[in-house]
Image 1 (cartoon, helix red, strand yellow):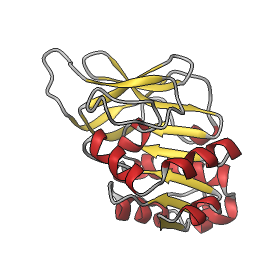
Image 2 (cartoon, rainbow, N blue to C red):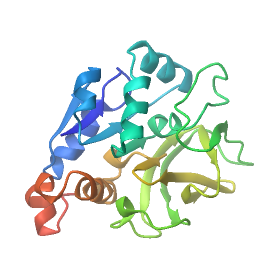
Image 3 (cartoon, helix red, strand yellow):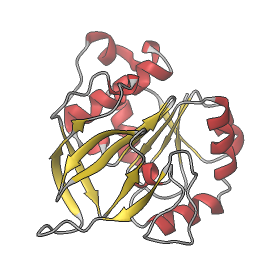
Image 4 (cartoon, rainbow, N blue to C red):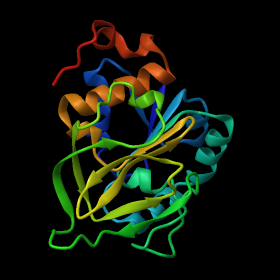
Length: 218
């Protein structure tokens, strides 16, 4: 089972529908016991880092996710969900993240450009290969909505976008990947990324006929 971590924040329904579009079963899960049984976890999030962190901790989800990470359960973070993989954010210095990846989250200050960044941007793959990026091509466009971005250690930065300078758009390690963009809003490119995540984590049997045919609905 793919468990979408439900802490009341994020495009939960949109993320679930995106998995359904590739034929993969994904359930909204909040109970720690159910999270412990998941084959893979997806941590979404939108809006303010502090609010997301407080809601996440209010539901007691930090300990189950840390335990899952220690067991090697595959984990995908989306937007603020990705930011929660880091220790903290300038957006709310008192709100803790999970500390899975080295670095911190900072406000973008791109000269001459508006913040937040809203819209499509081209991804540049910059780091070591990651199996969940097997179907993602250098230059693929994804949809972004954000004012803050990780300043991630170079060892975990796997992709950037240009927005007044290179900005971390993908960060990860073995069994873990965070994307600053919204794959569930990124059309065929986003669905290809989710399909690769499913294939590499819970297997092709969960990818359904879409994965077997090699086609992804737009």
